[in-house]
Length: 245
Image (cartoon, rainbow, N blue to C red; front, top):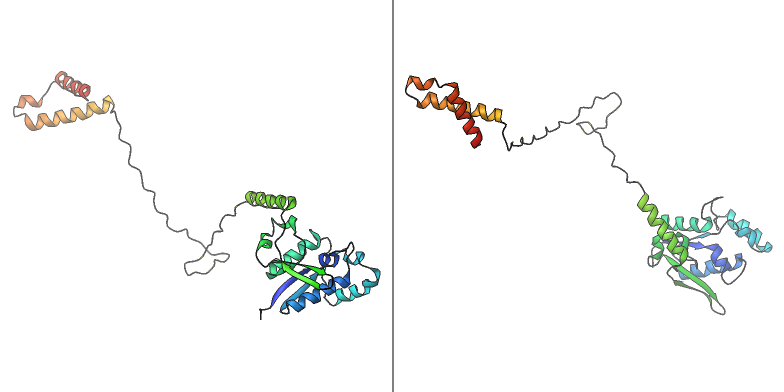
């Protein structure tokens, strides 16, 4: 015994199978036959908005009663995609099987689940035998390729939503109007080391050399005369060091 599940019947399609105009009697026969094969199914029959205008005049009173009792459903007035779009949205929401001989090619981009196993079943009346139902795969064609390409393009152009910032108080509660929010501590950026100059300027070199000369004179010269170096000697020594650097 299979668990209860939904089956969405494309009423307009089955009612027109092998015919030029839909027959409510044929649709009723198909639904009853399917219920015998799948007694645990929750059947939902959908017909398009023009169905009542195309059936025989003798069936219109039966049609009105079926609509009144909820045995037949029609899409909302002005629905985009007519009955097919309505059928597929119901099936998507209910994770249901679709009973139809239609391939819904123009909806392949929006409803790729139609190609999943067990999501589409077809049926035909066989003379002298009755209705035969079988699992099927949607047929791909030009409309299918166009719908799939359009869906891919729309998905590629869709803007990426930035994650929303969640703000909360230290105790985990959400802030209210009037609450003062304190920004979290921000780590100070690590300062990069200053680049080492490849070539010191002459001014810096001269000051460095002068300091070294003065230190050497004070430490190493024992005679008091060495402490007083003339400007000319100091300049020559500095110039020589700078040229060497």
